Structure formats: structure tokens, C-alpha cells
Length: 66
Image (tube, rainbow, N blue to C red; front, side, top):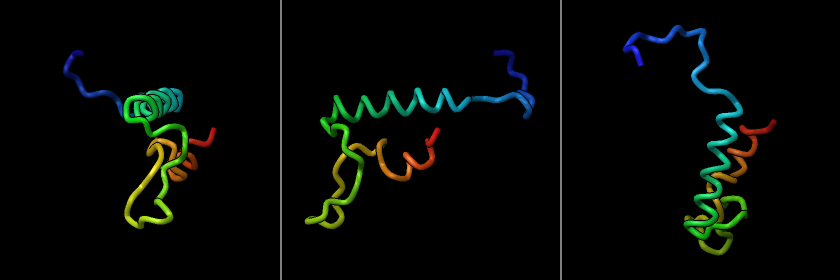
């Protein structure tokens, strides 16, 4: 860490880094918060209540397509 600004052409993170971050957060939500491996979606019987793992939502899954 030199304190100098990084050139804009130098990547700060890669897609591989994003995949590792998603895997880590999926594990955290699944294990520590007992949200499992089900995708995050609105509960059909209780509008406004969401169930499942937020990191496995359809939006995130579409964004993280490899």
C-alpha cells in the first residue's frame, strides 16, 4: 500500500473473486443462519416475508452466470 491511486486499467477484482465471495456468503447464510440451499423468494402465503438464501436469489444467479 503506497497511497498512490491505482491506474484505471488495472483490475481490482476478477469474476473468479466474485464467485469465491458468493460461495462464502452462500455458505454463511446457509449454515450460520439456517437458510439452506433454497433460492431466496417471497413466501407465497405471507406476502412481504422472504424465505431461502439471499445469495441464491434469481437476480444474483442471473448476474453470476458463467
